[in-house]
Length: 411
Image (cartoon, rainbow, N blue to C red):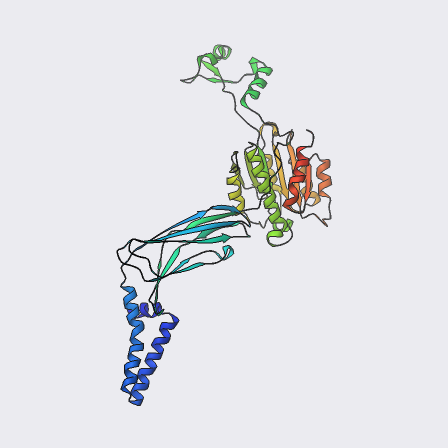
């Protein structure tokens, strides 16, 4: 029974039609007593079964390789998938129907028909991928359908190989340069601060094997009765904190033109720019979840940030407080950091909470989207609180607005 089920499942619509026609001819031949009709009916009935047997007995082996170029691309750009199918047996293949599984948003399945592949031969195939929606998509697995020359039978064989294509948010290039006041510290700065405070204020620690003898602090050694050394310089550097407002209720619109998608693109553009400028970055959402992202240089800078933002979605939360608490806990020494917040609509209470997130000498830049018709002037309130505010309707307006931020005097 299992063999019969496999055979029936392998039949195409044409094969099933042949079997139905052959069976009908056989029944009519018995009813009418026509021997010639019986022979023709038997031939039509047996032909699909013979095709199933012939295709299922094929013993050639296939190998598959896939290459995506590039494997990460911005929204609206094209990637290319190159397939290489090899016949590693010593038998030629028959007709092959090749289908690579591709998500619908990337264009649907890619299908090819190959007449035959000679023994130890190969075929190169390629197709294009394009998405207007960011995300991480699985490409594959590849399915090869073996078919007979008459199109009566198809047997599917799948490979396990899959690849991942990451579609990142659309970004725009920002003018080079750092935001005035976004202070960059090094270890020597802290050392000077300690020396200015006086040697008595140096915090020593016990001597450890391998410590430089020149760092022995003799006054502390005499006080504690054991060998003490000055602490190592505390290497530190101010960093940027990027807050993205993902609350569903704070954004308007649907699809790529929505204020949320524009906010994601703004965050990606600013984050990649800061990474190229050498600032370590921490990404925080309104829910308080954060990710530390390293600085970089060159065109690949900010790649980890783009990977994170490629899959970020809108949240069902209604409060900004968890994210603002994470921002306050992410500042450098004495709150020295650059804070960039990308927000949807803000109420008066939310604007007040955002204003209080900037502490010490931190520089705050607020990017507001989806503001037309908002009942409260959040931009004006934040400006009076010392924030540098950009009100945008799309990411294309960001470069000119960011140039104004870079030209702003230190506060």
